[in-house]
Length: 325
Length: 309
Image (tube, rainbow over all chains, first blue to last red; front, side, top):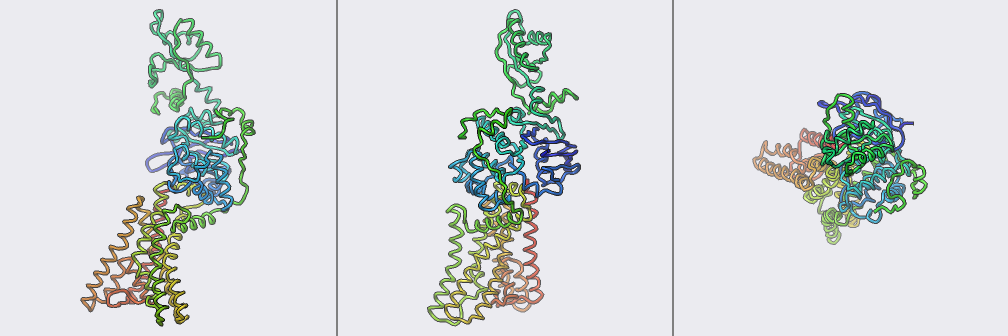
């Protein structure tokens, strides 16, 4: 059983190719769709909702053809847009009830489902107040609620963590996780940050320039991309501590590279990125630092950014990188 | 904010089934009816029609429509009271003339309500939420158009019913009053369709609400005064000028309605010199009314093509 299947899906606009022969299978669960801005994420969502015809190829959502069964798809799918979409002068309850009815729920069911759904996304007394006074976090919850109110079998969430502070972001990611685990609804969530999706998703699909870059389960991703940032001091014996550690690690058979090659990190000259092969890597790094007599300033898990996946991909193929962000 | 103490980190992705059993605070799936497009369209129509009188919204948004509705009905009540008290054998105001008598109030109502019906969804970008549901563009446009026309019809038809009730209480001729009321209702129905189309098109093309209000008032009044002025000049000059009065009436929404009902509904003409449009001009009135309704619908459809996701 697959939730979304696309077969060499292509969308060309007069001047740009938004999707280029995209072929993916998405299974039930939480799937992350990662890509830089303009990578084709929104175009894909439009096609999956049956609102924009594909130039070539085909796609099926919940077993329904996007080209011919759009209305049936939209009855069973929820959509949360990236942008603001809430009128400020109505309350969350009124708004979500109205949206439930637009999805075809009879009046009584619309009211009951609205009360339930708003409670599930964590909106309580404030749901009777006009939405103009809500915080960004509360607005995002209402947007999620309107996508869930008709109990869809799949929700498409477009950048749901946009504009949230770190705490709000964590809450939203937990909520998304629960949409699948507790509600039994499959989720396709887009983001330009791979790091936050790793925690939440079972599966991650990376697109760039409309092409499929990778599609694999999250555990594969973590193995392939996990990196340890190690910063050491210089000593009299080793005037360039970083270089000494790099040499030591390489002889110990651990893949490492200076972070300065990527730029970006502060004090990058002394930071090494060490690939984590398993638990023993941490011990080996510690021992190597101790043997050299260097001071270990920090050793931390790197926050994976989408750029890293692109860089790895590019170095695999042609080298160079144009995706700094 | 989230009353969820048992689940602080959310890092339970390895045991999803277990997490579900801890936190099941009762998500219920929905197995009931899904009533589809037709129902969604009717619901949107009902919601928009209620919105036309501020029902289901804040008390503040009820003030304008209710006040204008009151102003619309007061003259009818006065006419009825006077007619009954003095025992006249005919109402001093014709059913078909009532709407043109209170045209400024109708214009204000349209200018206030058409922008709130369509501009809000465009400005707050709610439109994509509709189109990600079974409802389609044609359903949205039809529901909004029909709701605006229905709101205007209620606005203009209720005073006529007040007049009719008064006429029957005053024991005026039943058959004649009923026939005139029916023609009056047809006249305000046509007016509602035409004005709703004009109001919605102008509102949908001006997403800022303030501009929408001003633009609708401008579209309804400026051509009207221009046309009536030119009609007077033509009428004064006599001869061919008198014939031109009928044709000139085509050039503004207000005079279009006057000419239409003078020609087809037997209303007393508002034009200078009581001119009634010729048969050829009358045909043009009819065609223009139809063209305005169809054109408004087409423009709205085109407007929402771009407003999708």
